[in-house]
Image 1 (cartoon, rainbow over the protein chains, first blue to last red):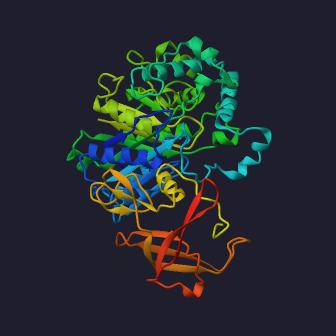
Image 2 (cartoon, each protein chain N blue to C red):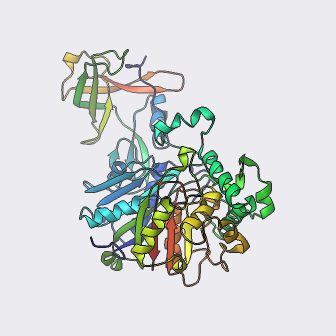
Image 3 (cartoon, each protein chain N blue to C red):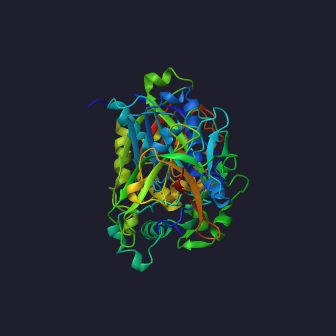
Length: 381
Length: 136
C-alpha cells in the first residue's frame, strides 16, 4: 500500500472572523470561508469536485454545492464525532482524491457556537446507549466528563490546577497577539486563572474553551496540483484517525499507557518518519486544559504523569518556549471552531504569516486531545 | 386555520425576510441583484453567479401546478388524509418552484398545469402561512 506522505497538500484556506455573535447564519459563514479558501488557492468555484462538511455544521454539502453553482460533484462526506477532536474532513479529502473520486476537495466547518443562531436541527448525540449510565447521575456535559479525568490525573501524579492554568495562560498570551481571537486584548495571569469560578471541580472557567461563531475551510488537492496553484503548498506528511474509550463514557482513565492518542502519535510519527523532537509548533484541540496536558504525555512530548512539570516555565509559550502551543489562541482563547481553527493556524505558521510566528517553523502537529475520537496531521512547508 | 396540523416554520437568518413578507400578505422571492435570477428557498449566495448581492422581490403570486402528490396514508394519527402537496412554478421565472398546498381543491381537481394564485392564512398574530387557491 503506497503511503500518502507528502502527496497531498492544503492549497488554500479561508475563514471568517471569530466572534461572540456573527450576526449571520451558519450557512452564510460557511460560504464566506469556503469561497475564500477556493479563491485563496487561485481556483474557480467550478474546479471543486469534492465537498466535505465537518459536523456539527448545520450546513449540508448539497446546499454548498448548489451555492457554488456545481451541477454535479462526485465526492461528498459529512463527518461525525466533531466537537471534541480535530475534524476528520481532511482525511476524507485525501481518501477521495487517492481513490480518484475528486481532484480539488473543499473541507469546512461552520458554527454559531456562541450566539446559538442556528437552523433548528438535530441534536448532536453521542452513543445514546451510554446515556442511561450517565444522565441519571447528573453527568450531563463534557466539562463534567473532563473533570472526572482531571481529578484522577491529579490524584495519580500530583498534577495541580496551576499546571492546567499554564496551558490556559499560553493560549491567552497567543490570543493577545491575534486580533481575530475572541479574547484578544484580555490578558490573563495565573491568579486570574486560580480565581476564576469553578465549573466542575477541578475545572475552572478559564480551563474551558470560549464558544464562538465562525467558519473555516481549506482546499485539499494533490501535491503536484498544489504546486501549480497560487500559494506555497502546505504538505501533509502524515494523517491518521484514532478512537478509543471515549471521555463521554465517564469512565475514561487518563493513567493508562495505551490509548487513542498513543495510537495517533505512533501512526503519525511513523508515517512522517519523525519523532516528537522534530515538531516545531503544536496545535492541540483544547476544549479543556487537563486533556491537553494528558495529550502532551500521550503524544510523547514527555513521560506519562510528567505533563504537569512539562508545561511549567513557559515551555508552551511563544517565542521562547520549547513547544509553542496553539499559537492563534486555540479554543481556549481564540474561539472554539472545533479544531478547524487549529488547522488554519498550522497553515499560517507554515506560510510564515502567524501572529505569533515561530521562527523557521518547518513542521507542525495538529491533533485532538486525549479522550475523544479525533484525527491528527503532521504538516510541513 | 392551517391546512395541516404541523408545527409552524421557525424563521432563521435566511428566511426571516420571507416570513415577514407573508405576515404582510406578500409573497417575496429572493433575487440576485447582479444577474437578476430568482432563487427559492433563499440562500446567501447566488447559485448562478455566486454574487452576495440580493434583494427580496414581491412577486405576483400567480403560477401553475408543476407537480403534485395526494398523500393518502397518515404518517401520524391526526393528519387529515387525503391531502395534497404541490410544486408551483411561479410565473416570474421558468423553473422557479415553491412547495405548498392548494387549499380549495378536492384531490380529483388537481392537475399539472392548473393555474393557481397565492393566498395567506394568519395562523397566529405573529405567524402567517402561504397557500395556493385555484385561479381562473
